[in-house]
Amino acid sequence: MTEPTRRSRATEAFYGRRRGKSLKSAQADALTRRLPELKLDLSLPAPRDIKSLWPGRVEEVRLEIGFGGGEHLLHRAASNPQTGFIGVEPFVNSMAKMLTSLDADGLTNIRVYDDDATQVLDWLPDAVLDRIDLLYPDPWPKMKHWKRRFVSTVNLDRFARVLKPGGRFCFASDIDTYVNWTLTHIAAHPEFEWTAKTARDWREPWSGWPGTRYEAKAIREGRTPAYLEFVRLS
Image (tube, rainbow, N blue to C red):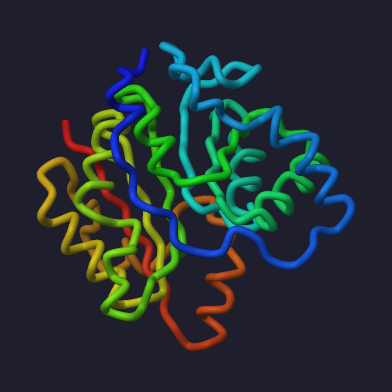
């Protein structure tokens, strides 16, 4: 059971829009029907066995922070039916788009949360996640906004607590300053190590990578994505 002090721990403010254009009728319907069913209830203690959050047999648990339209999350869930996925996305339109696709695909191994990811991280028990994905997060390019970047010392502390020893934190971005920012924070953190041995390890995406629309846009505009993988040390 998660300790009450963890659930009350201060979280960072979420920066960004919550809602965009009006939802299409199918998206509004999916949001109304599926979000209450699939949303994590953080008012309750996390279960001792986190794998019990899913109806089927689950062997691993992964968290994706800021899944956008859900293309990567849905692809990974379909390809890994015995992995339980938690997807966090505060933007209403993106959540509705993903839930609409989820309805059509019939997947049962996804749970969601529609607010600040730090709330989920503080709710989870110790050492329960096999992987955390943070893919093309908002880079907050202006220096005065860098403090809003999700990669920070306090959030790496959160990652270290909830990841199993040997668990992975995977980060993708096409913004050089954010890539360097992340590598600098990892180098200063005692619980993580960058796995790359050669340039190929960060220039090529992970196995089974489906691509994302953000990645496609970056490549069209001449930016080179980086794919960083870090291991949680024992």
